[in-house]
Length: 405
Image (tube, rainbow, N blue to C red; front, side, top):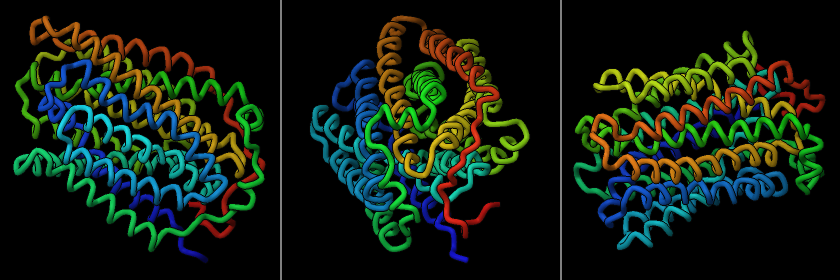
């Protein structure tokens, strides 16, 4: 029996997310060094995801046609270049350019998910795709913590460290990661969007994609304002803000790395997604009531739990409806929708936070929290239509010798 490459692809995602996690809580405050205001910071954060929106389907198509490994390798090289350019940014324009480059390179999550789908039977995909979420979570645990420590030495040290990690990650991938089997089958898949939607179940995939877009937009509205709101409301510094992301990452890693597989088999992917969206919506709408750091952390934990239940299950629902020839493109479409949500979320948050600028500290950020909760509630409503719609995949796009546990 061949050794499963699952550990290799997860380690690569994990190392990549450490670098990404270091930057998220630091970038808004770093941008202020170039005199960026709230709405400019929102657009800066959104530019990364906008490029992911454009690039994810393209990278998914490339990975279906030419292989997963080359796409992942090029993505890591681009990420390294983006981090190094951020570290050497001399103006806000250069920082935007670096963020755009990193966004194109970072559009490979769909490809990584397709890699795992290639080697996993449908009944285990929630668990396996959830492991990517766990890698995200652990990356957000170590990333912000490392970034917070490095920022004490130099404001640009986290960017240099993230770039070096990406270079080392690319070398690791080149050495240890095999191309999954079934490349010939993938090359025979349809090439235009209409055929892809038709073969993957157009109505169902459309609902999943729209739901994912709305959910990610609502989640992004809240998460991108954490540094500013935490600093102004509670006086938290850059390192302390990073620890909030550490807590949320730990929760995500615990649920998606361990419990999601068992929960999926017992309750079903659609039911878990619905529950997760409900918990996220309630947590966001209660955020304005957080008058102290412990209460703020409690609602943040509810948000992290809900997100950990919904993200892997929505992706698994999309994957289960796709054949071997479509995994990269279908998951690329879903991830592209999520990236578009991360475009709208930060932009909306930036403008709403600018409107809250004149409010007292206790009310600063209330508008984005409430609007984000309403948006997630819409995703909850859409997700209810997916209950009982989980398909049985006739074509199993995984090698027979792969682990089925």
